[in-house]
Length: 105
Image (cartoon, one colour):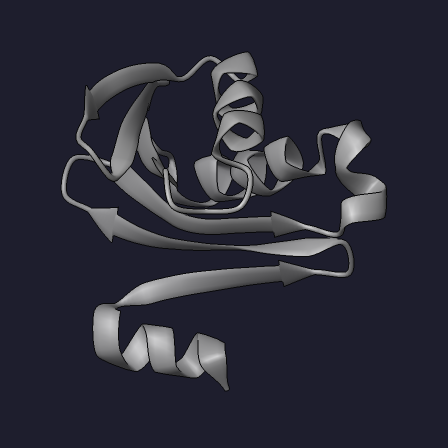
């Protein structure tokens, strides 16, 4: 039901797998913005988040992806470290979030 709400209210797409999910929004220019990426805690060492990302890259032929780290979340340092390991660069930052960008082509 949450996925349907996200789609109806915000034009966000959710891809679900047994190990986690990714919620994202598409923009012109083959661009996506990842709003939520979740992988079950016991499976987080295997780059399954990267696999979810790869699926949407291929599905939509993406040229770039944006995402953010909410600094009020429980583990912002851990989230930022994981994202930076996957070739993202800091795009901009504010007091409450860091926006990151990954150029694919």
